[in-house]
Image (cartoon, rainbow, N blue to C red):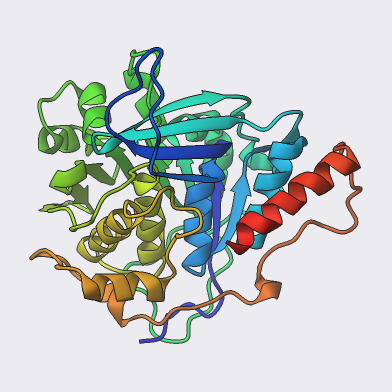
Amino acid sequence: MTSPLNTAPRVCVAGPLVLALVMGPLEHEPRLGEEQIAPASSFSPGGSANRAVALARLGLNTQFLCSIGIDEAGAIVRSMLTTSRVDLSHALRVPHQAITVSLGFDGDRALTTSGDLTVPSLSTLRQAPHALVAELHVLGANSETVEKWRSNPVPPITMLEAPPAAPIPPTWVLSECRWDSTGQWKSSDLDALDNVDVFTLNEREAMNYTHKENARQAARQLAWHVPGVIVTQGAQGATAIIEGEEFSLPAAPAKTIDTTSAGHAFSAALVWARMQGLSPEAAVSMALLASARSTETMGSFADAPTLDGLKKWTESCDVPDGYDLAFMDFDDVTLEEETTQRPDPAEPDTDLRDDSGFELAKGIADILAQE
């Protein structure tokens, strides 16, 4: 059936932006003094950019609140994101673009990052979004703004058919977990969940926060803090407690090459499903399929699926029992050019990039975008 949304919901992604160099799969972890030749690689915007692109390709009007460099690396990610119809009008300009190297091996990956991962304040947005996707620490730093958004009605989405089964509250919030490099996993981090509808994290993160022995126990503990929690378990699928209902689903089959963007694809599909009013089981089913699909290529920027693309891939794979495929009944929606928000032309251009350097980087970005 046709999507019930006449005007695409505005979704804000708030998180770090990096220029990601992804390589793999390697035969083993890196060793001092040894060079491995990776069979595949990709070069693209990374970090929360994968999430923003995945949302935009599903037809949602996506704003990306991040820090973007005014150097050549920043010019590359800026051009590629703009081409993917991601709104960068509220991005913060910084001197140098953050860069991440991701090496895939043993079905997982190791990351090394350098640069500024600052996320601008949510208060810089001119209008509250219908949905917000952000990591836990970003929500904690912007608690006053999120509370304000959730206490005031968001302009309604025009419906072509009956409203969703569950009403959309003012600014529906999905929180993800960021790995705590300090190893502290403070319980105070979870205070930000007071303004969250669904919290997604992997099994290891959930066990670190709750000190429980498995995903199910951890999910039950976290459910005391938030209305919905989903603990992803890689090849074992996911365990969820949403709206008082607990269920588990196995992983969707995939020919996994790189897992770098699996979590971002999962979140994007989950938000799309929520904006369409799908049931929790249908939303998690779609998210697991999107996540599995994203692991079959090196990085996911260029291959983030449209709704039709995900539907066709789903038809070709052996879907596990228990999956609710309600999303298959929806038609793909491509945003018209004018629906994507653009920078205010009245705002002065304060881009400090050297013209020659920018033109060189833009040329590289154009070539990459055409491949």
